[in-house]
Amino acid sequence: MLNLSENLDYQARSAQTRVAGMKHFGGFLASSAIAGAFVGLGVLFMLTAGGPLKAAGHPAASLIAGSVFGVGLVLVVFSGVQLLTSAMMVFPIGLWRRTITWSAALRGIAFMYLGNLLGSVVLAGVIVGSGMVRPGTPVGDYLAVAAHHKVHHTAIELLLLGVLCNIFVCLAVWGAAATDNAAAKVLVIGWCVAAFVASGTEHVVANMTLLSAALMQGAEGVTLGNALWNQLWVFLGNGIGGALFIAVPLLLAAPTAQLQASAKSAT
Image (cartoon, rainbow, N blue to C red; front, side, top):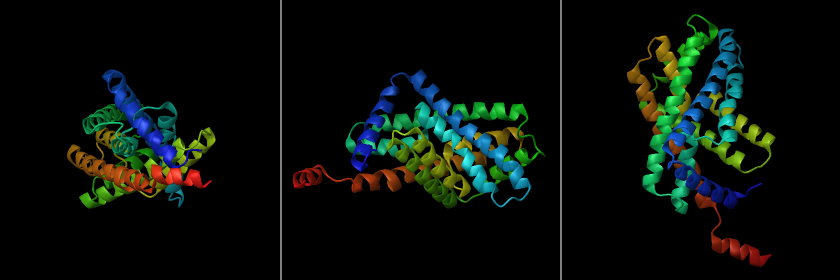
């Protein structure tokens, strides 16, 4: 299992690998699109599992919906595709350790957003076309209510909900990287993701699928304008959560080379 310093080294190398992948733009965009679609599959599982429970007024509906959503991030981590929200932790670590440049980090964020959006919108079209979220059904009603709720938060609410969400997501990615045990990876990802979904926080990539599907269905109160409003503030909140609440504190907490050398000499 990786300790703090080893995990930081791993994340810094991961940032370098991600940036190098941009040399093959088509492949990088495809990888990002797959990541968006994988998260969208988690959204679909959340809707289909949680919709009937929400309709029945089950008290554990949010917990169960959150528990199944984790399949999306599990697929992302195990396949190694390019997810924007995890990069919001990884890239700041790479910048601090100087394995990547600011220009490369900003390009990577932009390309990942574009690719994640592409995959999310395509999957949303497939979901809507399948009839699984048809209005008047428990699943369709859950989609409409969830989307309506997301686009009627204030800017500060969206920002802070985005911060909280990416704290959970980045801790899931950090914890998964710390172990080689596949079952342990699934467990840490599942619990962290269940926490962010059940708590009602906001994930910019998950919202791409959910809001796109709601727009395609003509959900009441959901417009392109307020969907973009949600995206803007949640994007910023996720970025702050990953960078300032996870990456920077972990970097500051890491022992310096001098302290590590002193500890080794003492033993």
